[in-house]
Each structure stands twice: as C-alpha cells, then as structure tokens.
Image (cartoon, rainbow, N blue to C red; front, side):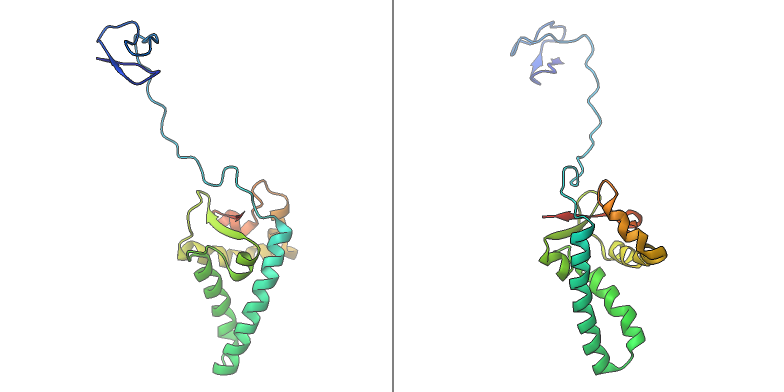
Length: 165
C-alpha cells in the first residue's frame, strides 16, 4: 500500500495517482518533517521597560508595607528584608496567576520561553538574578527597552519573558 501525501488516503502498492483525490503519488515518500512545537511566546506582546517599571513600583510599595508590618511584629529586619521580597516574588510568579500584584494590576504575566508557568526554583533564580541586573547603574533592567523580546538581564539568565495579556 502507498499513502497519498496530499490527502493521506491509502492507494494500491504501485499506483501512480491517488484513487481518492487524483494527486500523483511519488515513487518515494518524503520523510515527515520533525515535530517542532510552536513557542507560545511567538507573536506575543511583550511587556516593555516602562510598564514593568510601574509594576515594580507597585510591588515595591506593597513589599515595603509588608516588611514594615513583619518587622514591627517580629523584630529581625535584616533577615525579613531578604526573605520577604524573595518569597513574595517567587511564590507569586510560580503561582497560577504567574504575576506579582503589580504585574497583575498592569496585565503582565511571566512565563518561561515556551509560555509555561515558572517553577518555584526558576522564579527563585530569576529573583536573585535581579542582583546582577541592578549592578552597574541598573543597566540589566534597562536592557528590557532594547531587546527583541523586551527581556531584562535577569529574564535572559532565567529563560523567562514578561507578556502582556
């Protein structure tokens, strides 16, 4: 049996034309192309520098208030100053919302390069990679204004993108 590459129907072994659609059947059937899933982020609207900056400001206000309350209750400010921003960022980005409160308010989600939700580990790596983005006058953050997918340095390092819904 031969298979028509036009309609996919079976034909007689040595048929020159498909019995269903009439298309010529080649002597050898070309191999099927390798399956390559389309990236979710192809054609996506990426969140640029300015909208991400506004989301950062909203998140900073929220985290500052949260840390102030936590410090008043428990006292260890330095420790909480490291843990609260990390847990806030990593837990929110790896949640079903895929966004912090500031990003949610502005319609931004953070995904991996294939559009999947971040794991807590990847979100943690992205959070701590922001230290590198902050070095040298925050140039790593400003990169989001000039890269094709609007990625900051920490996004590139973590393999993430910020997408507008």
